[in-house]
Image (cartoon, rainbow, N blue to C red):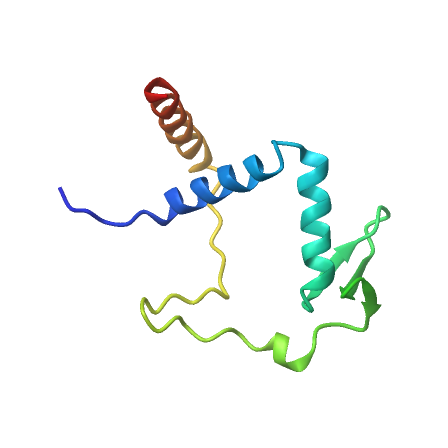
Length: 112
C-alpha cells in the first residue's frame, strides 16, 4: 500500500475546520464568504433573482473581468496542476461518490 496524499481529505478537513470556526452557523459562514469575496479584489460573476448576470469587484458592479483575470493561471510548478479547469463528476458518478462519503463519515464517527 502506498502513502499517497489524497487532496479530497484536505478539502474535507478544511471544510470541517471552517465550519467549526463559525460554530456551524450557516448565516455566519455566508456572511464571512461574502466579506471575503467583497474584499478579494477579484471580479465575480453574480446572478440576480430574475436570472440576469452582472459582474462585481470589491462590492461594486463593473463591466467585466480585467484582461489579467481573463488569462488562465499558470500551472503549479511542483505538481503541474492547472487550477483553471474544474472537473465535475458525471451524474452517473455522483451516487458512488455520495456512498463513499457516507461510509467515510460513518468510519470517522465510529472512531470518535
